[in-house]
Amino acid sequence: MYRKDSTRWLKHLDFIILDLICAQAAFVLAYILSRNGLNPYSKVLYRNMAIFTEVADLVVLFVMGTLKNVLKRESYKDFVVTIQHGIILGASLLFYLFLLQEGHLYSRLALILNVPIYIILTFIVREIWKAILKRSI
Image (cartoon, rainbow, N blue to C red):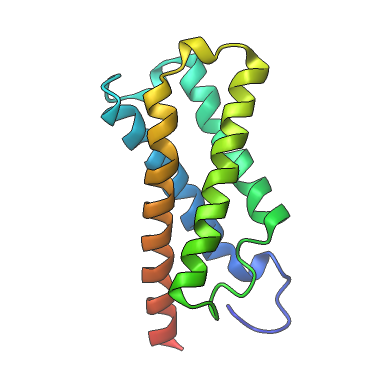
C-alpha cells in the first residue's frame, strides 16, 4: 500500500477513512455529551451538519496536507498538526452554521465539545494505526 508509485492522496487512503470515522464518532459523542439525546441524525440540521463535517474534513485534509509524511512524523509533531487540523475544522463548522443562520438551533455545547473530542480521538487513532503499520512493515 505504501509504494512510491501510489498517487499522493491514495497512498494514505486508510488514514483518510480513519479520520472520517473519527469525525463522525466525535460528532455523535459531542451530541450525546451535550444531553440532546442519542441520535443526532434524527434532526435535519444535525444530519446536514454531519454531512458537512465529512466534506469539510476532506477539504481540510487535502488543502492543509495534514497527512503529508504522516508515517515519518514523531508524536509531538503529529499532535500539533492534529490540533491545527481540528481547530480549522471547528472554525469551518462554525462558519457553516453562521452562513445557514441556524446557529441558534444548534447546541453550542455540542459544537464546542466536537473539536477537542475530534482532536484527541484522531490523534490516538492515528498513533495506533501508525504503530500497527510500522510493526507490519
